[in-house]
Length: 167
Image (cartoon, rainbow, N blue to C red; front, side):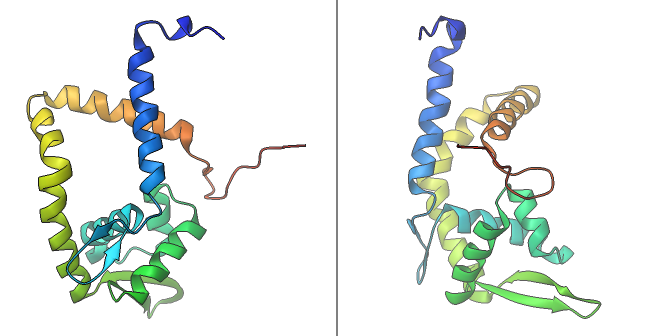
């Protein structure tokens, strides 16, 4: 099938897919190391959200939805983080069903080590490009990435996977 329908955006679309493919290849690997523990990109995203929202006592369902993860994937990641001593689980006295997440002291130290490394190796160049963009350009870029991410998501509004008939 001809690709003319993409017009001048073919290279842009190819770059998006290349980035998505590269990320998907490493997403489940334990490729990142702190001083004492290894963890992968999913676990990093979870730790970042716990840092950002930890004082608000958000539950596991909320975090999974915010991150666009299936609850089962999120639970597996949390299990790994707890086993490594990076995350602690709590129950609120007013609702025993809600599991509240907090970074452990080890988790905080490990994330700090990761952040120093990640900034230098992965994010500094990207932030330098973003520094040259106006706030409006950054918002447009975020909208574009969010739109692309919404096409790739297998999570419905209810948080359950959508079913696609195969036979």
